[in-house]
Length: 490
Image (tube, rainbow, N blue to C red; front, side, top):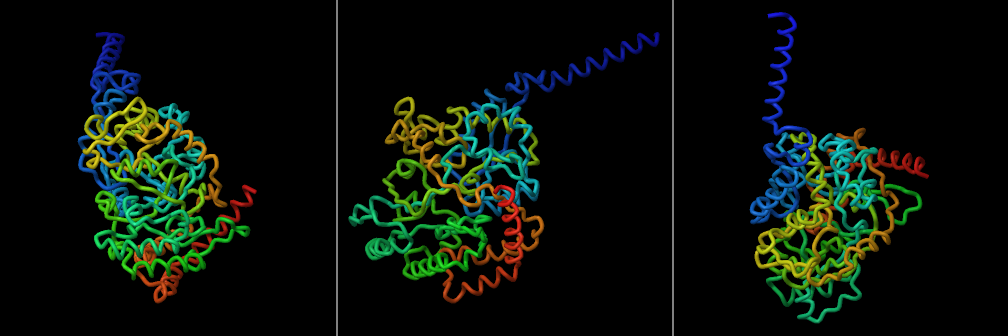
């Protein structure tokens, strides 16, 4: 055989091998990206926050049928309860647990710090290639406000932009005792109402809360749930220890009084979620972050009327901009497909509503083209809407007005910026001190904030523990960075 024929035979053999490989993989790149006729569907593993729901696997089977058709991917959702989420996800990421998509936020598995640690994939290249529709849909303030050191590491939920706290009330009990909430605003103003419930409803928890509760004071935290904060009306931009402020000292004193009076559950400091209370209705009041027409949503979700009144102003903070983000794991086996899924989730009403409300005819029914109402089985799939993507694709509750999403846009436009909006502290120079500070926080923070630990006898000791761990050094580094940020941003 001639050299030329040998060469041709080799080329032919290689071409045949390539053809076989392409056939096994499902053919062309175009086929793969569009959903892949003949290609095996990939399984995306999605970790998210919230009390694990009985029907989550049943719903994900239906979700997977839809996503397989659309992008040739199936979805397995793993839910981790509220109070356990940050620690559990820290372990999962460190151990290399298989995952593709994971919930992160400023307060739940810290978005900025974990982005800097390399837990999440940088999305600068994936977004324009696989998220073109998403970019056009989400409020630009979310995508720009969630950048870390100039890069996107997650897809924020398109929802309310400001953060506003409200006191929520079980309206059945309000009406029963003819209580007026028009003058309720401060923590102290709750006392007469709590006293009435404690004296008359022995099976009801007067003040519902879990271990994540922190009394509201008019400060913005440099790192959520750590003592470093700056006053919202600051003129000097000085970072202070929140535990040393007169506002927090007064709030902790009130919380201790409420705890001793039996208004707060004895297990509040170790309770991961109040889902059992809201399911049963055996609570009187709690505090929550609101959004336009939130009372309608809560009432529809719980199956009984809930009303609320403001506990704070509406402030746009890093916490609110970064309050609900879906990141792609740095170890994802299928990052492109994960981005395709996030693009679909945030732009496709069918998928978004299925993930949020479950299976039509099982968990909810459509009332008309835009409105829905929950069915009895919805109790087995009651999901936290804010954590699951673009809220403005959701069906309206039966009693929601047609202009609900216009109200959201108005609410977003009227929010007031925090003085440190878009400042993200880089803790790399004080990482060991920050770890020690976080260890102290794990020991004392929840007990102090829920009133379980009496501040009269313990606050100074806790402050000293934080300082021994290196809080003052961390604060000094944060102050240096904040001063440089102010100079750069004028």
